[in-house]
Image (cartoon, rainbow over all chains, first blue to last red; front, side, top):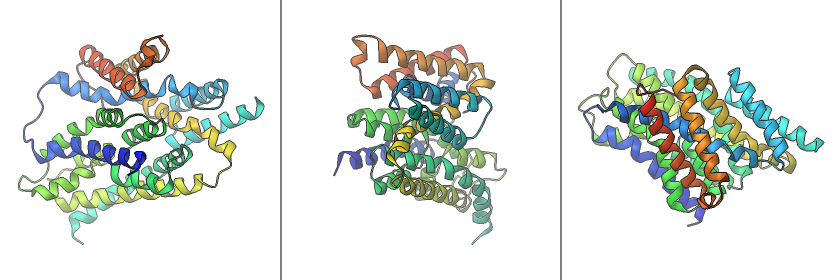
Length: 100
Length: 232
């Protein structure tokens, strides 16, 4: 088995475990307010940590990456959809790299 | 086809339509990063999740060790425990184990949101109906994106490196505008991630563990400062 295929199988398993365990086993509700709020903040923390500073190194030049990032920030601020934000950022990066 | 199934199926159509462009983007990004088309489709087929598989795929492209891929994906998907737990209170109490295990696979942020707003007790037929459309939308969108990517010119493919991060920004900015807690946790995640990336010596740590540490610290601080919690 290749590295990538094995990794995907591992991802599938660790994605399925948190989905299946509670519904298959637990009947009681979580009481701890701390645990509940911790879990609810996980997506934000993960997305923040994964995006920055990595976004700066995601294209051929840091300048084009910064331009793409600003585009994404502005469009997201005005609550444009995921696809719109992604496409516009790609276009801005592409145009920047032609100029550079 | 019984009525529970068709009721669930109808509720799932808007989700399926919403998934298509997101998974299309995923297909583009994964193939652009060097993942084969068939494996890209298989990722969506076997994972059926957004942030988790985006992150995992990103780490596969970066060639990081299995343990870090497993931990990162798991930490991102821990939130499903909450949803699964909540649904366990809403499904028929006598639902067989096999049925529970099948519907568990289809729990996503969106199917959970719809199922948890359903007035009646959740049956197996309803849940299958709800899940099947979004699952199809997710896999078909990925397949379309993956195949489109392999015919794109190299220059366009290189500009697409930004797409994944642009999507992350689009996911996180709208809720952060409305909630001080979400904004704080996101910002702490960014600061810790940047510290680990740029400080000499501790920047030796791998990308996977950098994200895990940032996530645990930022979420803990969030839970301490804002114990009310937040929905993405």
